[in-house]
Amino acid sequence: TVQLLDAATGELIDNNLDVTFSGPDGGQVVNFYSDPMADRLVKNGILNFGIANSRVPSLGSPVQVTITAKADAFLPASRTVEIPATGNHVFQIPVVRRSAPPSGVILASIAAGTASADGVTQQDIVASADNPDNPDDARAEFFSAAGSLFLDAEGQPLTGNLRVETVYY
Image 1 (tube, rainbow, N blue to C red):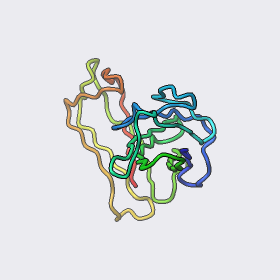
Image 2 (image 1 turned 90 degrees about the horizontal axis):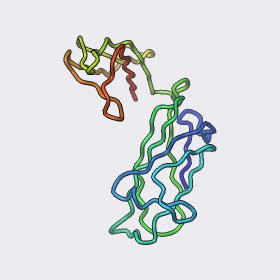
Image 3 (image 1 turned 90 degrees about the vertical axis):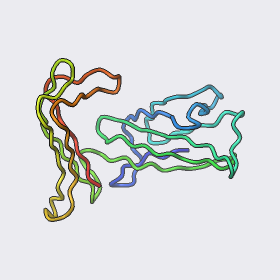
Image 4 (image 1 turned 135 degrees about the vertical axis):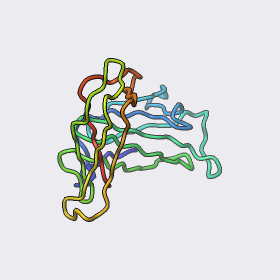
């Protein structure tokens, strides 16, 4: 069982989350009927899955599955879980709500220049996230030189106006 929790409140997330399974044993994930399950729409913050009977976990060879949860209102969250034995196991994955991150998590989203029709940036891109409570504190920065190529998750070039989202933990 996986509990998908709001990172700020600790409450189960009641928004729809798209969950995918990957990693060394991601292909061994099955549903209640033992059918392979590469992804699942989670509606109530609780996700149940099993492991194919052909893959028996042990302390020396635990099942390793990477669980990734995505939703528009949240930052993507990913966690690799290890299952060392058969039986029931409970895992918790905190997910950061964009509109209400937990203390210590800072999000910054800025306009970051443009990319041509082939996805190449026209100028340098710099983005940073400062700690608003203490400007002298550490910061997170991202830099990309002009001429960089940006692709989406399907490998297609990003074009037009670009935005950079920086998250500082």
